Length: 384
Image (cartoon, rainbow, N blue to C red; front, side, top):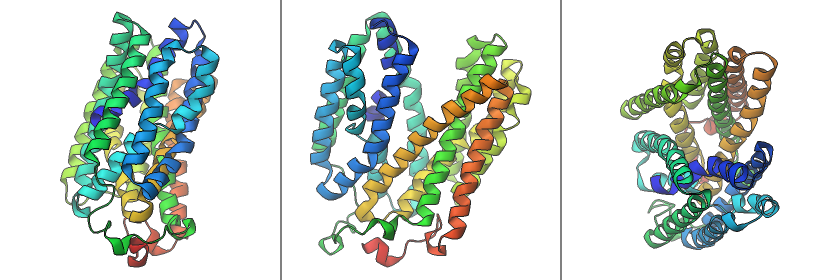
């Protein structure tokens, strides 16, 4: 699944390079393709998850893998308007690597060990964001964007074939027994206040993370230190990995809401220490110690609250929640930076995440106790 995620991490930057440098369009046109793909993915993730719940892994992976491979292999030969038209459908039919990974781990790992395995998975996901874009930029600059696009298509095709062959379980052995294969429960019986709260908090976490990255780039650019951006991002990644290792190793960690709240709270004052670059990097370390734990806690909470029969759809909803957080964070924080300064960009990233986390906590309080994140799911719902 680490390999399956690599194309996902590089698609945005590769399509931007292709549209701007190969097709000769502007960054706005490139952004339109990316936005269409993101919207398609946000809409398609729960639907694809629901199809996996109903029909199993192989059929869905076969359809999504073939469609995605054809799109990315043909992308170098398509005119811009065709790329825009097919971007949303391609996003909808993308192989859901993130949600599939969480389904596999939930099925294969006992509940008491899931914090550790979700932390490790989040660390590997962060590593994929380091290697994927760097590899794509290298291939594009040394060869062409057409070669890189074709390579992404081939990677998707091969990983989809590997998933089809291995046919990893999406439910644990006990959950897959015939007596547990009852009709799909109605949405209102499992999409409870607790699960909605977990999804809202996931939106807040991604809002904070994408907003912080945008504010960081703006801050270093305003002081003429853009050349150190990669170094600061490396410092952030190392701190995030350390935080994930600690979160996965301890016997009892903080809840999803507390981790998300700390993430937002610790980034608010960062802009006050924006110069020089190394001081900004140090100021971002406490916040990034919460990054991997918060992301892992989001996955763990949804895995606990979602009944096995609809786990694919629930994981798809979480995937959509993360995309929504990114889609909200970029324009909101960007507007604040353009209107004021990067200092307020960090504050906006943190306060926006805190606001969404607070909304999630309020949703928890209004829901029944059994639906709170971390609380056991009633036996009747689990069997459903």
